[in-house]
Length: 321
Ligand SMILES: [Fe+2]
Image 1 (tube, protein in one colour):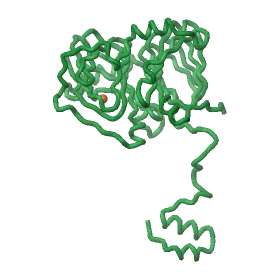
Image 2 (image 1 turned 180 degrees about the vertical axis):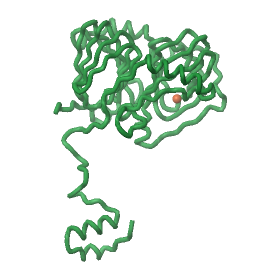
Image 3 (image 1 turned 90 degrees about the vertical axis):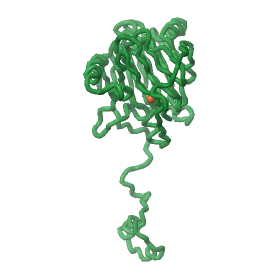
């Protein structure tokens, strides 16, 4: 950026000269911007996408042959939204990844400022997440939280690999800046206490009975929230659709990632349709209209940035163009 003296602006004879001076001074004009900074309704660069658990499972098994135990906490498959140039976010504020920890392995204790949670897809009794020194059982379809700066590790004390889906607000942390990460001084934090009733755990058995007792939000559709909200930046909802039910979700400012917990069916985004079943992950960027159809009784986990949007008073419907 060059120094431009105030009197040089007095000598500008036309718009071209003024723009050149502004450019030299490192200032962008506001009357003929290359890209408008405000527009009538949100733009969306990310697109709907679906990832299959059976493919991820096979890929993780292959990774298990080549990525050693020391890197077990990084043996994951990041679901980056499939738009040109994107290498990380699944939707604007969230990233999701499949992870596997092999029989007898531990993934080392660490903590980070990003909020994280996981949905357990395949595990046997003896699989734990260690959160702040307590062993929390990882039972299939349980949801486990590791909020901002909580120590966490994974210990597989079973004879089979365990698989889950991670969800984190890392893209939001990147945007705002406050990323901190550190490893624990112990490889895996010592823990002799099993805490099945931890507030960080939402057991699936409880989720099922709460859904059973919940009122319908639409014909054949029940919904509950895990936590209130689960974390500062992330809300978790479980939807249950009866067999044959169709449920329309209008476009809003929420960025969501869905995961199949039970059953399966089809989701229609207008531009694209995806078949889904248990363990599959679906990116539903803000502004997308979704029509879910359940082939059989189906449970879906919806991970969204609702607390953030609500706090900012930015949770709004988006008109269909
Ligand atoms: Fe982590």
